[in-house]
Image (cartoon, rainbow, N blue to C red; front, side, top):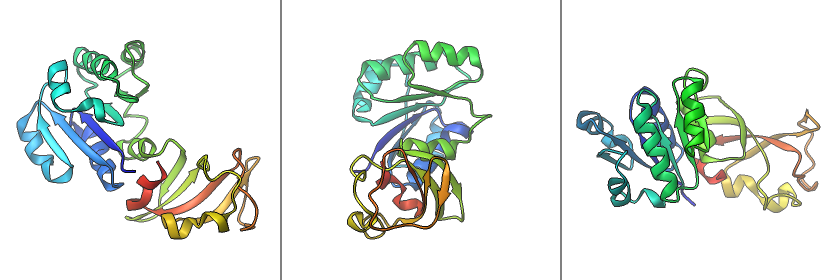
Amino acid sequence: MVKSFAVFGLGRFGRSVAVSLMETGADVMAIDRDESIIADIADEVTYAVAADVSDMATLKSLGIANMDAVIVAMGHDLEASIMSVMSTKELGVPYVLAKARDERMGDILKKVGADKVVYPEKETGSRIARKLVSSGILEFFDLSGDIYLVEIVPKDEWVGKTLIELGLRKKYNINVIGIKKDNVLTNMLDPNEPLVKDNTMLITIDKKNLNKLG
């Protein structure tokens, strides 16, 4: 199922997250007060709108309550970030990720309800976007413009089934190239061996199919 995200604030970080989420096949609503910024990104996301995200009535009218996650990317504006986090959680959004400029701001955003706080100088927007799409992603590397090498935790419905039974290449266009057991990676794969919850998988996948891992 395609996931839906809303990104509040379209500075360099917010824009990077929004565009990267779109590249994975997600639905993305991009929101900023600046109409010129909205006009510039309109063709790169599902829906772009100029609005005040600190206003609860506005968020309700935009259907924010229906989002799988919201990214509050206004690290320069503490008050607006606080109001946005509180409002989105009150609306029932299950996961709110907030950008903070420093540890103090991060602590405040956590106290008012943010599920996760990130510091853009430590983690890029594109990397965060990939992790948002699938909570099972532990690490990923960009092999080319379209292909990623990704370490993932097996989905719950995969555990106990073999690679043959799952047919991952056909269903997800995934190539399993290794299994990590007790932190030891092996590429000697037995397609008849059931997957174990505590083991991780090293796969290659096209970026347009990454959203299927969610």
